[in-house]
Amino acid sequence: MQIPFHLVDAFTDRPLAGNPAGVCPLPSWPPDDLLVAVAAEVNASETAFLVADTPATPSPGGADFHLRWFTPTVEVDLCGHATLAAAHVVLHHLRPGPTAVTFDTRSGRLAVERDGRRLRMDLPAQPREPVDAGLVPDALVAALGTTDAPPVEVLGGTTWMVVLAGAAQVRALRPDIAAIAALDTPYVIVTAATDRDGGPDADVDFVSRYFAPGAGIDEDPVTGSAHCCLGPYWSGRLGKAEMLAYQASARGGTVGVTVMGDRVRLRGRAVTVMAADLLAG
Image 1 (cartoon, rainbow, N blue to C red):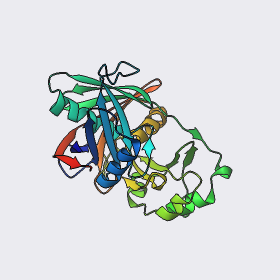
Image 2 (image 1 turned 45 degrees about the horizontal axis):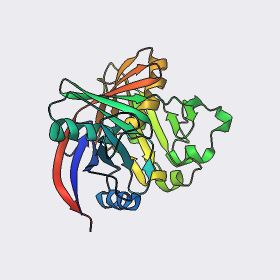
Image 3 (image 1 turned 90 degrees about the vertical axis):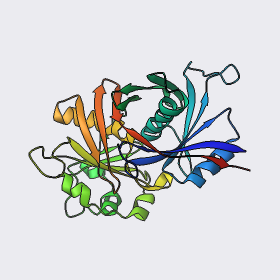
């Protein structure tokens, strides 16, 4: 079986930066164990699989495509950068005429449209609730190595969100990934506001990093879904709906963020770095 494959760097305007995602357009859904095996073989933080809406494979939400996302180990409910990558493949390679595409996903119907040279995604907001300082696990602080400079605030939920005092502290973080993996919630976003008056992050409103060993990802290069949590938080703290963010991983990537009630619009560019066929038996 031959599976069309594209490797796309998302949230960047140049190859070998941003967050790589595999994108596999399929004529119909194969068994899930094959999807898991392909995602493990690709070994990107996420691989997106899409099937066009046809009479044989109708979309429950009437979207253009069904879309599913897999890390190298598990299927996930929402992935921003692989959605951006999938839309890039559709609008630049599969159907270059239209200016927008819709996907039916486990997180509902998602729309992506051209916004000049960027793509703009409409995703559900995922706000987090503050955790009382006395309830923050010592193991979380120890795993991040922030014992000497405790977090300004910690928010909880399906992912920890840890707010630090400054962007330099976020960039310098060297966490114990094995210790994060041992947490009851092995997913951690670390973030801080920036100093708009100078420094390496003067052009953005906030920075972040994301560690997800629970999904087989030590550190994700640029995480769209994390900005569905970060957007509502920083919108409230900074008093603005439209922001520019930078995820300060080794590869790095810039994300435009607009908060609109219970939705978050993310903007970014994407670059195709490979197109080939995978041989799967």
